[in-house]
Image 1 (cartoon, helix red, strand yellow):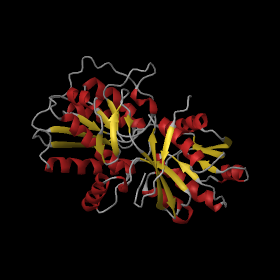
Image 2 (spheres, rainbow, N blue to C red):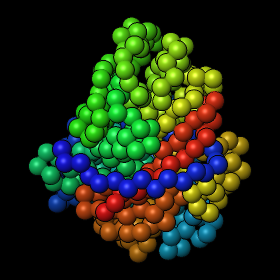
Image 3 (cartoon, rainbow, N blue to C red):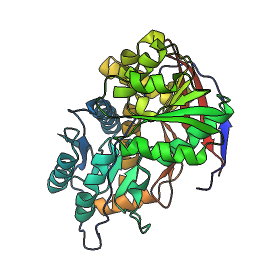
Image 4 (cartoon, rainbow, N blue to C red):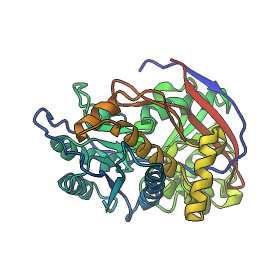
Length: 393
C-alpha cells in the first residue's frame, strides 16, 4: 500500500476526553434507483439505530445522549425551515441482525434520516435496508474502511459517517509511533476476533517504517493475557501497538504494567471509554496513547458542547457523544430545503466545511469525512497531552 503523507501538528491542551471503536462486517450494495424515500411532513423524523444494550452499549448510550442534546438545541432555535426534529429511538442490542431489523422498522415508521449504528458491523448490516427505502444513515463512529463502497468501488449512496476510517487510524498510528514515540521496534498485540482490529493491524504493518519484532493476538472475552505477555516481555522493543476495544485492552494494560513493562502503549479509538482506565487502573494508565476525534479545548464550539452536555446529563461527554451530536447537526444542515429523505441524502453528499464540535467536516466523493484527528496521552488514568493530526492534502 502506498503510504499517504501525513503532517503532524503538535499542540498540548488541558481538557478531559474519553474515546471510540467499531466492529466489522462486509457491506452490500443494493440498487437504489427505484427507492422512493420518505416525505418530510410537519416534522423531520430522525431515527436512532443505536447500541443501547449489549456488549457495546457504552458507545450507543453516549451517542443517544449526544444526539438528543443536538435535537433539543436545534428545536429550541426554531428547528429546520420552521419544522421541529422528532426523534424515534430504538435499541439494536449490539447485534448486527437486530440493527438491520431496526433500520427497516425506522424507515417503515417514516424516518427521514437515521443516526447510527455506532459500530461498523451493525452499520454494515443496516445499509441494505436504508438503501432499499431511500433513507440516508449517518454512523457517528463506524470506522470500517470499506463500508462506503463495495468491492467494485461503487459508493453506498445512503451511507455516511462522521468519523475517520480504520485505514486512517492505522496510518496515523504508524506515523505517530515513529514521529512522536521515536519507536523503531514495536510489538503488535491485537484482537484477532475483530475485523476492526485485524484491519488496523494489517494496515499498520504496511505503513510502519520500523520493525514489528513480535506479534501476539487475543480474542474478545479473554481475561488472562499472561502467556502472550511473557512471550514478548524480553523482546527488544520501543512501544506496544494494541488494536482492540477497551473491554480487553484495559485489562491487558493492567497486566502489562504488572509484568514490569513500562513501554508506551499506542491504541486506536477503541480505547475510548471511561471503562478503559477503570479496567487498567489509574496507576497502570501511564504512557498510554490513543486516537480520538474530540477534545474540548480544540474550539469554542467544542467547549460550549461540553458545558451543555454536563449541564444536561451531569457527566462528561465522550467522543461518541460529540460525534453523534455532530451527526445530528450534519443531518439538520442537509435537511434545509429538503422535501424528502432523498433530498437529505443528496445534500449530505455535497456537505463541505461544516463546523462541528469535532472539527471542520467535509464529505468526500466516497462519503468519507476529511477532518482533524487527535491523539490523547494518559497519565495516571487522566488525559495529560493532546497531539493534533491533520491530513496533508
